Image (cartoon, rainbow, N blue to C red; front, side, top):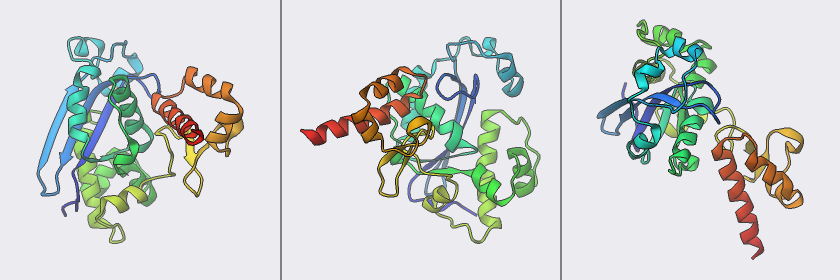
Length: 257
């Protein structure tokens, strides 16, 4: 089965220094771009994260400080990465909760404004968990009847993710071969930011989804407690979350003018 596409979709996988979206960095990125006509384009880069790679992370993806010492930084690679994904939807394995938020952070650090609203995102792991509840290695074996060699290699994981999605479409007749449907099916909940700190009301207004103001409109909190906005900007929140908060605040100010 071929994936029915209205625009390109980029399946991608990251290997990183850790799992903190706000502070960890990419050490390897692999992108498989699939076009509506079925053509494919694949790129993999090792990345110098500008910080030590913890041994616990190296034990998983087998990438060490020495292996990336002479590789480009993500800021140097960012224009190439953005050039690949800017016209595309996105696909990955656990991508909605980790890979997309972390990639957005890295792009913002490189002064590239990555807008969540311009791309649909298909999280193959969510589809898998809703249908079978296993890991990527198990998914690859279950759906494709293959053993995943070089697991936690970004290129191997990316290709396996793409193949698993195609097999899922073959297996489940109720899954529509449409990226919009797949993005909706594989989403957990809609958020204004990648990390899930800011959600939406049923009317589409931004609302805090954490802390003492959970469930309260962001615009109301920022108006009544301006000091809270300052604290959020100086605290260890992801850059994209701060970007959304700033946008809401500026929109509120503009409406008063």
